[in-house]
Image 1 (spheres, rainbow, N blue to C red):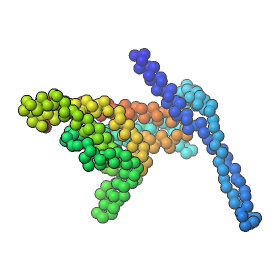
Image 2 (image 1 turned 135 degrees about the vertical axis):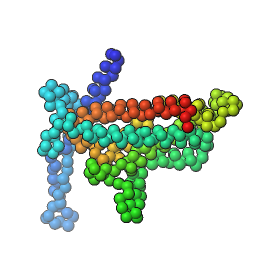
Image 3 (image 1 turned 45 degrees about the horizontal axis):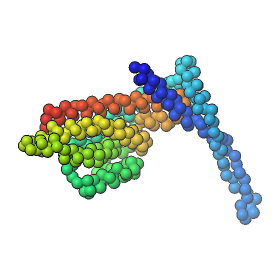
Image 4 (image 1 turned 60 degrees about the vertical axis):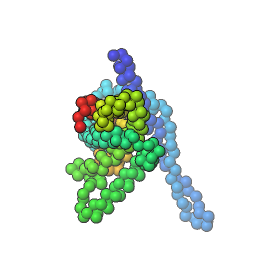
Length: 309
């Protein structure tokens, strides 16, 4: 119990320090440098220069301010323009948007990636299939998003209607299919490349060879032996899958205009207390998505152990 309490305090202290990093630097008032052109024209050309100021004392002043705001009960107050708002009334709806996208895309990734890795485990590692996976995993996500948006823009134009929303214009007109496609794409590729390559070694293990000698079909071996091994491997790799999901979340919410928790964070990053609260909510989001995907893996593992088709 003491170990967990110490870990929570350490995480909270790190969040306080990380949230203070943007306040270490600030722009001063611009100064105008005047100089004459080479032709001797008396009219000068003005150029604004912004001085960057360094404030190392904010690394402890901001956390102390946050503690004082907790004591005063104003830690959840922040400003949106000139309007004063309460963080508890605004942040949860952004949290729900990100949670729904992450959980759905994570479940889709597992439901596609696990069966696909089982079916492709016997392919050679130097085959064109694995070369394609290697290429796709190094392709930047924003380039893929741009290409897919561009493709579906012309598909919608050719179809004469809005078949697939490529941009969120309002809460009632939210882009769903393309963000889920992008978010689930890279985890599926990761599962296929890593798990599929690992399962190729599993297929050469002695217990798999023994199962073949007992006359078990390829489907039975896949369900009773290879499948549970894949689930166990992915459970150990679940944090990496979540890291891929979260790294793509910001660029996805930005390019599709989905008002999620990362967009809320960067829109209010200049307000320290709001930044701290939102980062803590991001950690809560990570925990919620981890529990969801772990539960799905448990369910898939039960299906494999029972040998259901």
